[in-house]
Image (cartoon, rainbow, N blue to C red):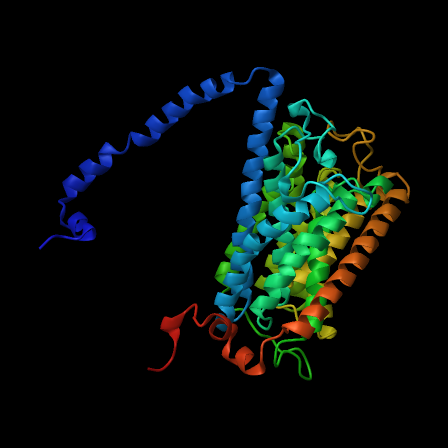
Amino acid sequence: MMLQPQEMVSKQPVHSLRKSAGQWRYVPWLSLGILLILCPAALAQATSTADLKVAIDTVWVLVTAFLVFFMNAGFCMLETGFCRSKNAVNLLAKNLIVFGLSTLAFWVVGFGIMFGDGNLLFGFSGFLLQGADNSPATNEAYRGTFSALAWTGIPLNAKFFFQLAFAGTAATIVSGAVAERIKFLAFFVFSLLLVGISYPITGHWIWGGGMLSSLGFYDFAGSTVVHSVGGWAALIGAILLGPRRGRFQSRPVAMPGHNLSISALGCLILWLGWFGFNPGSTMAADPFAISHIVVTTNTAAALGGLAATVTSWIYLSKPDLSMIINGVLAGLVAITAPCAFVNLGSAALIGLVAGVIVVFSVTLLDAFKIDDPVGAVSVHLVCGVWGTLALGLFSVTPGVFSWYGQGAGPGAGLLMGGGIQQLLIQLLGVAAVGAFTVTFSLLCWLLLRATIGIRVSEAEEIQGLDLGEHAMEAYPEFKIGP
């Protein structure tokens, strides 16, 4: 009888296995040697210092884009763990498919609306990623289709992929707030509409050279562009869907998540991913800017987690793990807008405030009987608004940081001696983006409810969406009975 591969390994003598393993111990060193030989050859292809800079910047942006993409895994773990086991497959499926939906919608229309040349409201060129790349490196500066991105010299495809990762993040925020009772098809269609139309329109206003940008509104990495937009859409969806069955009676009824272990893992993955989210938004490998942004980002996250721990300990009598997780994320969301424009002390204060308000926001939503199983609205909307306004409070005087000169960022914040102007501009931007996203989301959700429906049946909700929507279970071996 022929042995299967596993059996063949098990039959080998121990000394033989050791010998085989020993033969492979040189592979890492051999690989390193090949890289050391090939890297100088690759760098030699650069005909000038400018070409070398473009190559380094491109690698930096793509690596950070990979980190942002990996945040999908973080959301996947976080949301699944925070929900009940009978809906685990549904959460996993939504978080997996949402990046595919985002890729399609952003490639076909979203990227063109957001960054294509147009007017102050939206872009109307560059759909399907068609058009000249007007990066400085192409020697076609300001002559192509995407003038709003001409300031960075990396190739157009790199710009697109980095921005795509952000667009996917906005869509996946909605998933958690509407969990455990939404139809899969309704979420599917809404994600396409959000990433294809709503997200890029407000994104154009801020990052595409649109009306808010022209007024001096700043959002470095997306507290408003990404997080608040996802949060507003999630809030409207949660309200129109209504709470989960049995969630609110005479008082809110806890529906504990089935696996806080993977939720904590998801939090750590997201924390890691944010080191791509914020520093990568430099779109260039500027060592001083990147280092500063990494430290402000981490400090806000740490203080957010600590503040949520203490606040829940005092307010809820115990240090609630779910609040700790959301406190870390709250600090990360809040620092996303001002991370390049504030000093370390301000970053700590921004994270601390975020960690406090996220706890009270969660309980306030419960008081209004708005059911958000994972706290997405509190983390992304409430703390996204706070972080955007915090920029108007704490941004330092232009020129303090080498990458932040006059005309290259906001004016000094209110608490840094700059007056109230920047804060008012930030407030105006928050209101404009909120008004548009709420209106768009409301129309989309109502249209979906009137056509295909947005909520599963009561029987399906009781049974669980895993069986009702997907005809499978995440943990079939745990089933009780024959």
